Image (cartoon, rainbow over all chains, first blue to last red; front, side):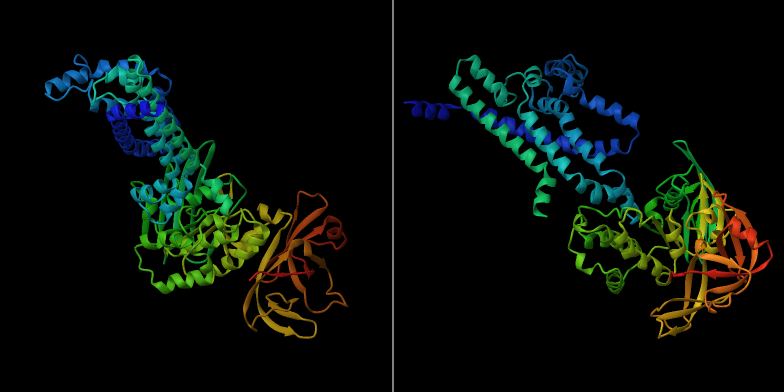
Length: 236
Length: 357
């Protein structure tokens, strides 16, 4: 009896929100890495004042309630906001309530989660390996690719995992800026909320259970990857 | 060929450096001074790792820095050996060695790589990661890595300071033979007088970011107006030649300018030039050559000057062996008993000498 209910629920379950979430999280992660790696490398070479200013600015999404962030973004991207007016003038799609708008919001919302691990990785590397590389005739760009990037690899991995997971779990900002358009902005977390509102607990159970399992796997991978020192010591 | 002329002016974090000097085109120059004297800062300025407020640097015919120009680090033809080796932890030893080799404009042939690896005995380490190496091994790799760039100038920042005693004695012989192996100038930062007399032949004495004196190592070691002669381990370095071997007593006689000294038997050819170190505390003075003493280890010398030390009971006496100087540390009492004065002719008795190269 119970088995047949689960089966029918699974058959009727709309899986688009899952794929939409994965698409959003992957795209956000790639964009975040492309921005935060050069940005944190630039910050790492700056003085204390510049570093503190930009780190604080980029960390704001950590402390602001998602609804506040979502509200500001909506005001910016909505049809009356500056960005919204610009897109109307240029005759392109309005960013609010669209998938590209979600991507921009997610990039801002998950920014500190990508920035901090990479920044820490560069800081803990210190200046010495780069100085050694410079005395061995490596140009600044060469040093970045052959020394800084490989040495910051654990931090970059952490950043990727964290931004992906954080975007998957995003809810408040999405509701504010994206609304609930199936196939466009209705992501997993919003879908669960919808099912609960509609008293469709079976669907909510399955999606939430999947989310729980997924989150655990992500965190496990993160801690496993983040302890290379432990695994190395064992093999030595 | 490549004489080095430099002047640097730098003020940073309560420390100020104001130096101007020129160094010989060959041989090892030691930058010597206490911590905080600016030795490492000078080395970093030469490499371009530190940007002085004002400065100029000319290496041979090349200008690396002047009023309007500052060559970036990677354009300077230097080899830099860091205090803690500073190997790339994510690369194998072989890749560490190839890092500079690949980027150097000069074509290093395969045999140069083989030679260097063999000379520093690191061939068996090539596939390992730096974290699997001992301190001494890491430093040997660091030296090889710097040399493989075929630099015009080799800079070494206290390469022995972070090593334990055993690793130190493992590296020292390599440093001593650098001189004969390379024909480029080497600048060596150290705060150990022991290392300086063993390795270097020229010295820049630094204090509080200023040059106190510059010259040949033995000249500075025996200058009583400088702090070196007042150190607990004050010594002089004199050159000589292996004269003969004594099979029966296992001794080797070395001919110095002022006489002959005996050391434990050495595996060196007759006529080979050597440097010996004579610690001031091991030298005593007498007015006559002493009836029972052998002809070795005693030299007729002329007293140059007597200088007070921080210990009121002791004096430092500078002695002229004839072109080369010796230091003796004696008590004020024995100086008074023997009526020792400047320009007097006395006999210096040397209890022990140490061969340094």
